[in-house]
Image (cartoon, rainbow, N blue to C red; front, side):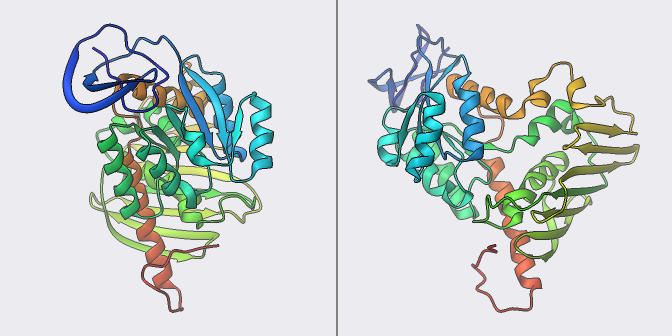
Length: 357
């Protein structure tokens, strides 16, 4: 069976089983009213992909989709025309400063712009019927996250969020363990780069670990205490299953450190994301290094693996590996930590205020 979603549709379905539904589907520029083809799609052409955001991460994403055998990178968007032109020239594609025009010939959009732009760019793309991969965070508040999820469902579009370190934990078997860790300690520190300063370090860096903690425990937050400021923050969480979590994030550190330690009844597992080493004293069988993981691309190239999974979700109609709902949970936790941190400061603030650098 086959499935084709709404959008400009630079792909086509071969003969399959057809189910009638109210949706209008566009396949290779032809609009089919009332048909939804379900299952995998045999390609006659590639998905037309555009990158929104011509910064560092936009360049990383562009390299993955330009090399993908099921995608055609055709354009780049940035409000800085010179930056868009420079990256577009590198890949031999069109550059746009007008987002509406950029969307016209696309099947899917990769949003790698500053976090403060994610909601607006994703919303317009989904409204136009384009599938969306949006870098974390999905949005900066749960209300906006909910709007994107609702719109993606209404438009029958894939919405995937770029929590790429989730792939590493999944491939290592952490999510398959029946027992949740008793304690989790995460440290994520880096030096100042000038990037992502439109949001706090909680939405910039700590949100990676919030996603990992949520999915390794499958628990909810009961209590939050947070301290620090926009560029350095710490948070202590007590989860509904009893797990105690401490998180620390900084973008003003002298050296780079990205580490998570998980304490179980049968031992300790530690992930060193910088040196790509896994320490394990539990009974679980885990690879010692990321490159020992039986050739899994989730370890060796998480960004490329995420691109694979996004394209597969668009073509199959299956849920993406990190759904909009998953991204929404991380936003909720980040929002609650920001609120707790603001409440800890001895200053007056609007309860709706976000923590900014």
